[in-house]
Image (tube, rainbow, N blue to C red; front, side):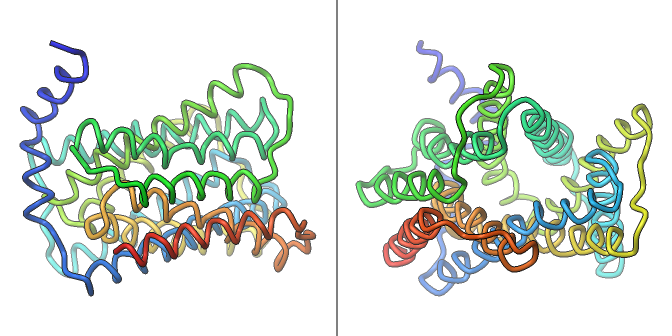
Length: 312
């Protein structure tokens, strides 16, 4: 038996027939358009993270502290809503899977990404991260038996090309930084594939709550060892609060809700809208100049989004 067949069989044994579950969860045209909007909303939320983080860093805080406070505040909000609405937590392997997605997937991806930023140029690390739509597409074909059409494959390639132009990758960087950048993309791709299945059982909101809480716990442990560096200004604290409410709560819930409606490949491709938001906010908030090549990159990403929207 091939390695891929063994892995697929193991996943089915643990989580059920993924292909069958996806067929049962098909949505109508209206729901798919809602899914498209939700993924773009999550991309806008996640795309604002870098700008908000820079404001917090300028106030004297550091990466681990910002990540911990961000996810801790988001956990408090999500847990409060769950308590008010009396929404039960999942149990068994679904709960374990969601905790693993938070502690290993979300937190692990964050640590790898920010460590890579210290070892390689930011543009190169961002480009390596945005290889994840191609990886998600490959994994979805192998494990979820998702059909890869020419339109979908073309949209992925156009989005990757647009991302390369939008983030403006720089040459150089230590080999370890490049490896960590690739690891970030791989971890995030697996995170999306597994999430696309588990969230069908737990629901988008409950899944978001457990994953965010598990992520906060991981960062809390790292801060306990490393120590915290708090923001020294009101603007720095405000940036973290907005990051918790918009970038995390809104971004995570809308992503999982959209993921259920459009599938992992489309969700990953549509998420390449994130760098467009980041570049636009950098120009509006931080006064950074937009290069013509970045505008071309943004146009290509929007083209990929429109192609997928028309296909849906």
